[in-house]
Every structure is written in structure tokens, then in C-alpha cells.
Image (cartoon, rainbow over all chains, first blue to last red; front, side, top):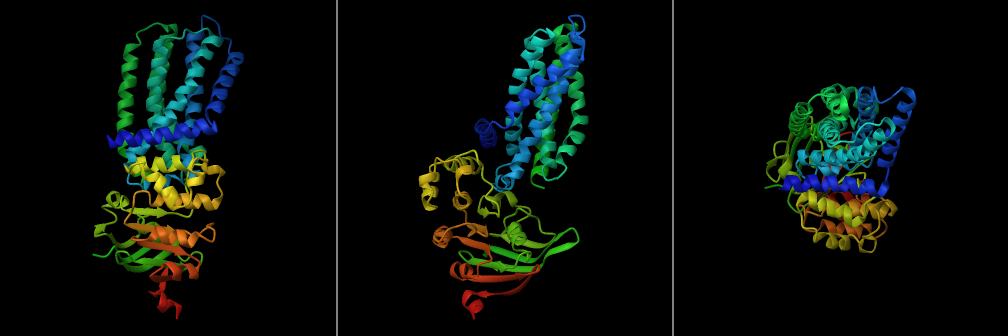
Length: 220
Length: 214
């Protein structure tokens, strides 16, 4: 119970800070919309090829928005010199980590709530429950891995460079499975259930691994 | 049992020694002031005592517990004030303290009491980013004692505090074991029962405040 209480306290604090400062979400939402606008002009997208091209554009926008969202989760604590104060409270590092990942993941979900309707508007792709479920499930795994590496590189001066270098290779399985699932969800044909269950498996794996690693990463 | 028992503490940053051969015994309810010029190793020593930093060598016991193995248990008994306040600028003073109550499993009812102790009741609902550096320091002090710690470690607690600062610190330090670092010899002699002088990572003098004054 204490673990959950701490995780929710950390998550609530991060979301409240973001609500008050409005630093990240408006910028990320603008970024994903601009990415779609550029893709709309850059590719000759029509009803025949939308289900082939749109998943790639969707994941590119999500990956870069995610890198910014997860990177800021720990960079802000570092800049405010508040991470150490939090770690020295005797709260379990895994609970602090879970709270940070929860908040950063929620911010990305808010961006997705902008991204998916705009993608539907620009590319004419259907806005389905399966599409939302795919993106949501991938976000869980992305948040776990992204926040772990963000915590690792928070102390580094070159963290903006190091975070993508460390994170992107491990996001690849999520993007491959997620890409296939999105393609199926927006009309590419094929069963989506298998891809969704695979995403659930990845989520469990990444959440467990990063929770175990949190103690060593945060309290090194 | 001593509150702090440090034997041969040493710490290096790369090949650069920051502390060497530090032996320190602090009894319960003792107030120890650590004096020293910039780069003397005060902050490094305090960070080690607060379990924020592992020493490169030497042994450290706090309240009879090994500071390396029992880190998490000890942190519940230690309050630490670092150089930087480390507060959340977009949250109010009350919200900052509420957050640390939640992390430490302390009843939020303690927050008004701590705000009163540090003279922050009037600004409780103001965002920390709008507070002066001195008021932020007061809030950071309130955060350090929100869980009623047995051991208080304060790194330059007088930084940015006004003329009432020493009085506030005296109130906060009551009935606690305290190790604090300062550049201000007058504050060290006023609040410290004992004074430890550090120079280039070595203890070059230690004794009661009367001993150091003469």
C-alpha cells in the first residue's frame, strides 16, 4: 500500500507541476501536430496507401515526443536539485520511479489524445478502440524504459544525446509490434489480438525489469 | 551508543582526494559545527553522513546501524538540508511539505506546525517560485524536520537567512543530534557544542566551542 501511495504522490506532484507551469504538454501537442502536417505534405497519402504510411508517421511522432517527455521527467528534478531530497526520504526508489513513469506516461497519453484524431483527420484513417489500445499499451513499455534511461542520464551533461542512443534500440520491439498492430487496426487487415497480447507481454517484462533496476539507477 | 561513529572516512573524486582519514564521534543530542574554507570537504562529509554519498573508504555507523547496509532505515531518522533548497517552484509551500509527508508516511497535520516553526504560515499558500531565497531556505529547513528526525544534517543552514536565522536554527536543533557546516565562526560557536575544523579534507582541529575560541 505504501508503495502505491508514494507512486501516486510522485505522479500527482509531477502532473500538478505540469498543470501549473504548462511547460511540456502544449509544446509536445504542437510538435505532434506539426509532424503530421509535414508528413501530410511530404507523402502522397491517399485512401489506398494510408494504412501503410500512417503507422510509420504515428510512431515517429510518438517516439520523439516520448523522448522529450521522459527526458524532462528526471532532467527537471536534476535542475531543481530535488531528486536527492526525494531519494533521501527512505521512500522505495522503485515507488519513486513508478510515480515518475506514471506521470510522464500520462503526459504522453494526453499528446496521443491529440495525435490520433488529427491523424484521422489528415489521413482519413479510422479512429478505433484497437488503435487507441495499441498506442496505450506501447506507451506503458515506452514509459518504463524511457524513464529508466532518463534517470540514468540525468546526471550527464550530454543527456539529450545519450537518452535516444540508449532508449531507441530497446523501444524497437514495441515499435515493430505496435506498427503491425496499428496497421491492422486502421484497415490493413489481419488479426490484432496477437499483437496486443505481445505488447502486454513486453509491458510486463519492461515494467518488472525497470522496477528491479530502479534502486540501482536512482540510488547509485 | 554514539549517534555517529565514523572511522577513517575517505572520499576521492576521481584521483582527487576530498576527504582523508576522518574520525568522528558524535554523541546523542550533541551539536557539531563543521568549519572550513571552500573546498575543505565540508559538503562531502555531510553528504556521507546523510547517506547521500558512499565513502570511498572507512566505516560509518549511525545510531548503531551500518550506514551502507541499513541506508533505507537510517534515512527515516535523518533530516538533511543540502546547499540547494531542492523545492518545487510551481507548488505552494504547503504542497511542497504535503508531498514530503506523503513520501515519508508522515501525517499531513504536521505541516501547519512546521510552517509555524519556520515562520512561513503567512506564505503557506504562495508558490515557492514566488518566494525569496531566504523564505525558500526556511521551507527547506521545515522539510528537513517534517518527520521529526533524530539526526539533523545541515549544510550551510544560515545561507540567505535574515537576522532571525540563528534563532530559527536554534529552535529547530533543539533535542536533536545535529551536524552542521558553516563558514560563519560566530554561528558555529553560538549553535555548536563542539567544532570540527576541516582543511583540504583533513581534520585540523576539534574541540568544544570554548576550546576553539581560545
